[in-house]
Image 1: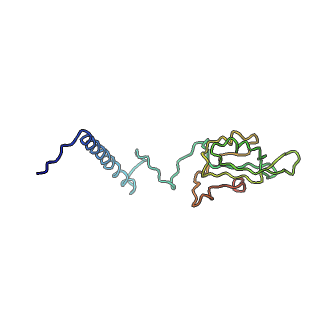
Image 2 (image 1 turned 90 degrees about the vertical axis):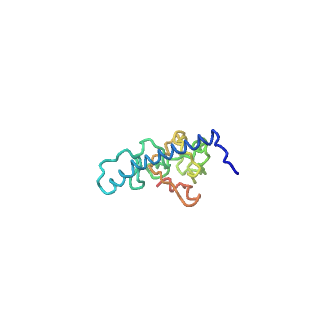
Image 3 (image 1 turned 30 degrees about the horizontal axis):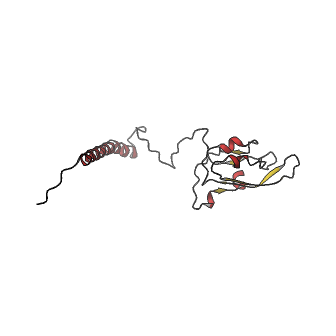
Length: 164
């Protein structure tokens, strides 16, 4: 005759907590589901207390100072404002900014970037590059937050993309 071993304290606590969690889930379902159905057929008024946002049809407003995708600023003649001083690349904790400098045709400006790449797959969006730039050449105020691509190479933004 095989007798079942009595449940220990941990097993009894687990079963009680699992039952409590299931009851909470059932309560939320029974309260919110009829409201959701009523709103779906046009009976419901207002938003209720649900916090679901139906993205991408409904978008949350972003804070004004949110750090989004980078952009490079232009001079009045259309050339990049960057002087390739390497301060942004030096201060970047993720080391995602890569600049190759060259001579500028204007004798008043020492250097210019021949290549300016930012790997947004590595970037932590800290904003240090914006604060370090003495020429106000780089900003993070585009408002673009959808940065997904199918390849890692697609996350590397070149100078022409950053100037656009």
